[in-house]
Each structure stands twice: as C-alpha cells, then as structure tokens.
Amino acid sequence: MLRQAFIMKIKAGAEEEYRRRHDDIWHEMKEVLKQAGISNYSIFRDGITLFGYMEFKDIERRKALSSNPTVRKWWNYMADIMEVNPDNSPVTKELEQVFYLE
Image 1 (cartoon, rainbow, N blue to C red):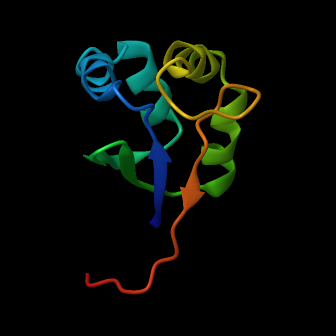
Image 2: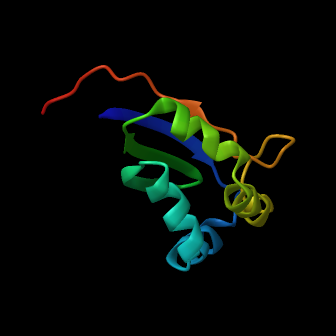
C-alpha cells in the first residue's frame, strides 16, 4: 500500500464553507475515489492549512484522477474557496515521509 500526505490551503474566511461542502460531498465523488483504489483518506484543518492523507495501491490510477470528469467538476466547485492552479486543481505540496510505524 502506498501512502501520500500533502498540504493545501483554503482562502481566509472560507473555513466553514469548506467543511460544509465536505459534509455534503457528492456520492459520485466518493465512488470515483474508491474506484481508483483510494482508501483511508482524511483531511485535517489547522486554520487555513489543510493536511491530507490517503492510501492507494497504484500510483498510475491515482494520477489518472486528474482527468476524471467528476474530479474536474469537484475542483471547479471548490475553486472559489481554495488556492488553485490554472486548471482549478488544488495547489498541493506533497510531504516527505520521515517515519512510519506499522
């Protein structure tokens, strides 16, 4: 199982809206993630900084999500409240793993 941790940013003042949208995350978005083999996916918040963690089996399937129409629709939906790239994907910084205890 591969593990990935990353950080993203919410725009100041959008913290509650970010939570609300994730409380109501679309069923089809959850299914797309599961079909890509993603599990144990969590997002934590500290102010406007988000810490994400996910596990997956196949890096290519995970990378292919960026071309999925549902994922792109979600990015567009979230773009007004997050720091995003020109294609509306969230600006992310992958974190280096320095310790793991199984």
